[in-house]
Length: 293
Image (tube, rainbow, N blue to C red; front, side):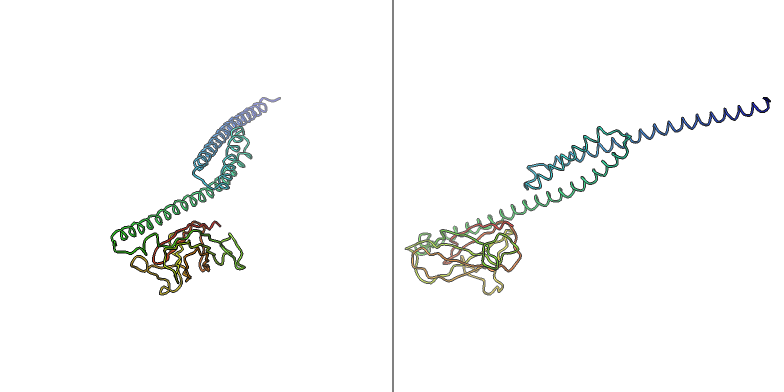
């Protein structure tokens, strides 16, 4: 064959081999860099899973007092651990599964945010109720202390206003009723609350017509009162205070069973309420009752 033909052909072949070699090395380098990037992304994903697992640990019992929420939180926490373990044994080159695990992470994180909001809401509610109950107890402690101080100062009071002659409430029961006057525990169905109580026997107390006043205090410390302010006042410790319900009764010295009804006219809140009874200008009994749901 003519050298003039062979030499150009060889040159072309050598150039082609050079190009192919360059492309092969470039592609190999690109593959190495791609694998390194996938390893890096997998490592970052593992770090995110570990951080999320630590966040779940921070919201374990005893921070959460709701049993159902605690169980759901434990399930999601175990789910994070399982996914993290799967991620660790998954090859970085398994791009499809890595992408699926990344989506799973986003889903679990959204669930985590939801649970955190619920936990914070429960904790804030518990703290508020604790503070409100403490405030109510402190307020009544002040009133009782003032009453004791006034009783000590007023040495001229007769035997009729001593504790021996005061009436007492010896039994109390609060029963929520629906529109059919049947017992219910559903706040939305409550139409009235029936207060059953017993006025104890007291042979030293003056007999005749008397008035009982009931003050109902909500969980937030607010008093439930009648619509007309002019008709909801009674005298207590040389001043006038509001009441929720009142009733006249005939007292003959013997124990007397009676009942009061409060017609629900406002939105009810679950929690601890307080019922305070006043007779003859004195606080004679105080009972807590709870509306649960």
